[in-house]
Image (cartoon, rainbow, N blue to C red):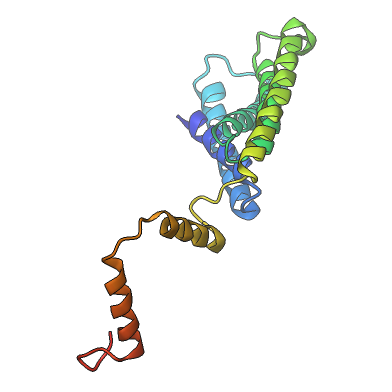
Amino acid sequence: MLYFVGAGLISGAVVHHPLDPARYTKIAVIGVLVFLVATLVNEFLLAAHRPALPRAILVIAASLLLSFGIGMLSGGLQHFEDFPERGAVLVPLGITVSFIAFVLKDPESSWRRIFGPLGLAVLLTATVSFFGLRTIADGLGEASGESGHSHGEGTAEEADEHEAGQESSAPSSEPAAPETAASTEAESGHAEDGHSH
């Protein structure tokens, strides 16, 4: 559970960092700490054989790298439509970083595996995903004319355009005319009852 919570916090922080750097830096640090606690519990407290100090340092460093790799991959995928250009970079980078970290973290595998056939396949996958996602991101940018999301914080111009669209799309009917006239009289203070609301 700590692994997933830590990776989730990091993924959100990585992809949303440009929106509020100070806030999402704090969230990333908390995510890293949670992920580290998970690593310490899993690799040292619950493990049958505790690794030597050099191996322990490598495991901790690889776990940190893995947490950011998973964060970049999952955050880039989840928010690709919101940040297409950023997601196109985060996803392939997350694939590569996660693979390297996983190889370094696994005691049964050698770091030379990174440069072997499997490493080449991962690099090819990351390259294809980068160019593929860049193409999709360019298409999304052309379709919408802009990228990024606001999490519900719309601009005044968007609100005005939305209201204008509603007014123009609403069918005109005759009952609307008396309301307009009545409201005009009320505003000018010439209503029959002598006061306006």
